[in-house]
Every structure is written in C-alpha cells, then in structure tokens.
Length: 428
Image 1: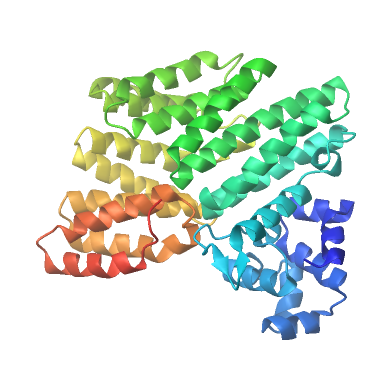
Image 2: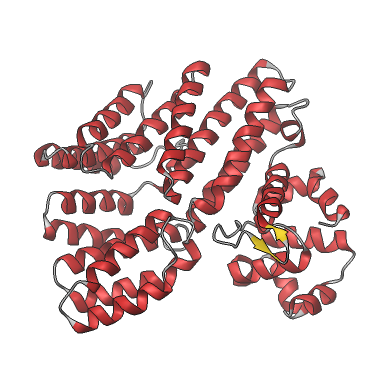
C-alpha cells in the first residue's frame, strides 16, 4: 500500500472517517492522499466522474454496493475492510505468486489499526474520547456482521480484541477510562465468539466465549457474562443431545442479569431458553417461555439498550418460534412463524438475517410438501447468499434445504436442487 495512503488512514482524520463507516468519505480521503482527481479515479475504475462524486457524498446506492466498493478498493490499493467490506474468506491461498495469508493478514491489521484510536492501537495514553471511539469501532463490527456474515469479519474482531487487551495491560489511563476499556474489551471478545459461531467455526466460538467468561468474571463485566451465556445457549440448542444444557445456560444468563433488566434482554433470554426446552423434549416449557418472550417484547424498548440488542425484535422472536415448531414437529406453527419472521425482518438493515429466514421458510415448506413455493423461496435465498457468504450458518441451512428438495420425487424439485448446488458456496 502507498505510504501516503497508510499515513492518511492512520491520521486522526482518517481514523475518524474509517470509524464513521462512511465509505464515500474514506474513498475521498484515499483519493486525495494519492493526489488523484475524481476524473482520474473514474478513469482508473471505469465509473463516471459523476458517479465517483455521488459516491464520495454518499448520495447514491453505489456508495453501499459491495461490488462497486470492492472495485474501488482494488483501484485505490487498500484493504476492502477499510471501505466497510471484509475480505473474501474463500480466496485462494496464492495469487500471482503472493501468499494471500500475508496480504490478508496485513490488510486486517491495518483496518483494525485504523478503526481504533491511536492510544489504543499502540497502547499509549488513552482518554475518555478514545474509549468512546472503541465502542464506535465495535458498532462497525456489528454492522459488518449484519451485512456480510461472521467469517468475513471474525479476523478483524479477533485483532481488535487482542489490541484492546494489550492496551489494558500496557496503556496509560485514569481509572474511569480503564473501566470503560474493560467493558468494551469484554464485549468485543464476546462478539468475536459470535462471529466465529456464525461463520460455522464452533470450536473457535467456544474458545472465545470461555475466554470472555473468565475476563468478565475477572473485571466484573456482567453484560459480557450474560452475552456469553445467551450465545452458548443458542449454540447448544443446535445439538439434539444438548437440550438440557441449552436451557440451563439460558437460565444462568437470566440469573446473571443484575439490577433492573431491560425487557428486550429478558425477551431474548426467554426465547433462548425455549429452544433448550424444545430440544430436551419439554414442549410445554418451550411454549411457556415463548409466551414470556412475547410479553417482554410487548413492553417495548426503554431506549437505553446496548447496541448489540438492536437486532432483537418480532422477526427474531418469530425465528425462535420457527425453530421450536421444527424441533417439536409442529409443522403449522413452524410455517406461520417462518412467514412472520420473513415478512417482519428489515431486509436492508439485516440482509444476513433476511437470507437466513428465507432459507428457513424454504426448508419448512419443503418439509410440509409445498414444493412449488419452497422452490421459489429457496431460489431467492440462493440468489442472495453470495452477499452474505461469510455466514456459515446460512450456507449450511441452504445446503440442507436444497438437499431436502433434491430428495423429493417431484421432478422440478430435483432439477432445481441440481442447479442450486452449483451456485452455493462450499459449507464451512
């Protein structure tokens, strides 16, 4: 990478622009560091000068288009992560004689360094504004996860977690700032585990969550402890033999909630417990927990919820209801809930979840024998999956649904399955 570009990205202005998530502003910063005009960037990239201008101002959909931003990153010679994209985890190891591991490792390191304030990135003097910027950087990880899936962001999160841990050990800061650093470090570590889980890497996820639990106990960060237990409860519910463990983890998360718990969190934890009870064969307890989850959700948001709870709402509760219906073999309940999940999710804000819910509705319809609609729904998910291929959960779900369709005696279902398999990414 051009040294002038690296210097611009790591300057106070550059860090603030990268942390803001405004891809167009980052493009403008890099273009100016290279000494290029908008027309010169247009000539290099194949887009018009007017399009470049609108992208830099954030006034066009192209400013959020993955393919356009990837093209610009390549022309500008910067890691895709700097423009809010994550590197493709399925890239070949070697390209043109260059070891991709070295290239991508350096790209991730630069992106993490640019996201974090200088005092944290180099473990120097850290003030309250620096701690606040760390939360902003974590929010960027949440956004990237919701847009693209865990595998594409996990490296960045792991790097950020290690930088934060190092800053706590070697940095200089007042006690109030140290407390904020402890909190943001613990929550970032838990998020790293979640990203590994979504990527389809269960052992890495478990390792991060166990490490986070130890850190949360050591520094008394109950929010991280609750998140770890809730995430581990969801992971355990994936295994038909771990139902009691899943329910117990969700119950432990409820116990770990300190003070006046917010309704949104209590709704999430009740829904996670429902999955565990369903796996354990206790349908009545699962239904009771789902009803409790709906009651808490009906209380509405208090307005002071942490950013990570922003995803939880009617669509996500409906997805949990779908899962309970599938586990307990209640097809009608699963179908109703799957349709609610898909129609209520915000596809623009949470494209990863939208694709996940589309895939799940496809599997429910296949199970119920509604094959023409199942083909149409699953086809939509297959067409969308490339943008969120970093989510191993979605890729695995789609492979499962396509395999189900391929096993049907209905010829169009088998024909579709054959074509879909050629388009799907390889599961993790």
